[in-house]
Image (cartoon, rainbow, N blue to C red; front, side, top):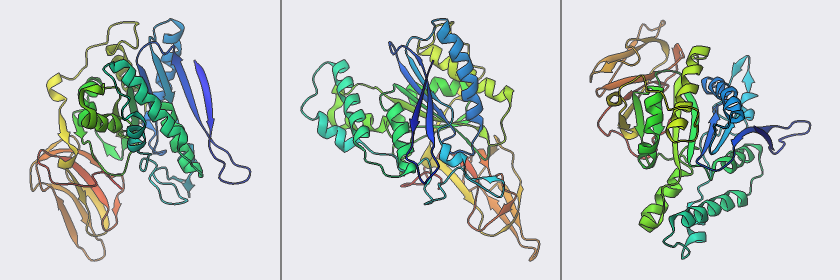
Length: 372
């Protein structure tokens, strides 16, 4: 194992932070990049990453890693240091309000300009040409803040990976994933091993999140150049249940699912991958544009009225928001049928607050599809 420290721009006198990455393997095979807690108050992936690290150390010593694995257990040291009155605040940078999982560099135009007229019939050479162009574009990215230097450090580590796995969690939620139509066929086995029964797909989400910042470059190049572009990067975001789902049992499950996925792509060779505990038929993809966000229109006490992982019918009561002063009771109902996969942890609502998500089958949204 090689431990590399990538310093970030120091934001003020006497302070400094860095990205710590752990590198396993030889590079003679597929490359997988994994990171955890890009939203720094989402901890389940951090524990799963630590479990992975312990197993990868042993597997490397035994000669069972036939490729390269880069693991970043703490992807956001900035957000991890943000607290207000004992409350961690890791989703947005307090300096400017930026979401830590938005606004990643789009290298497509730079890469297209670099490779235009240089593609041949050898897909292997084309792959290397494109990866070099992406890496150069990331290296050329001028950054002058700690926030953007962190984004650059993370992209520098993953921009030539075959697979990018970004570990997050929701508030209260069942296991679910986000990916792109471009990547789904390749990463579906990982969702299978995790037992993620809700998997949302979209190629264009808006916001330039981390997970699709590289695979969508390859997809858009394929749209331009067709068969000259090999499939070379697949990405997936794992939502490892909710913020409170931090336990040895849960993290062991998640780490073993990722290891079994890496066995399935022959990156880890100690034994055949275990059979997933969930049937193939239960691992289905849905359109992110068919996900319904349910919000409160008033403020008050939040009462959950439907269970997570339950099948919801249109019109069903999901939650009530009760004003104990005026006695007003707002009923939040589903507008479509689907699966209730996430719910707020907060028990008091503000007007306009996101309360729950339902994964349906009919497209009901367009444009910017991500949560704030």
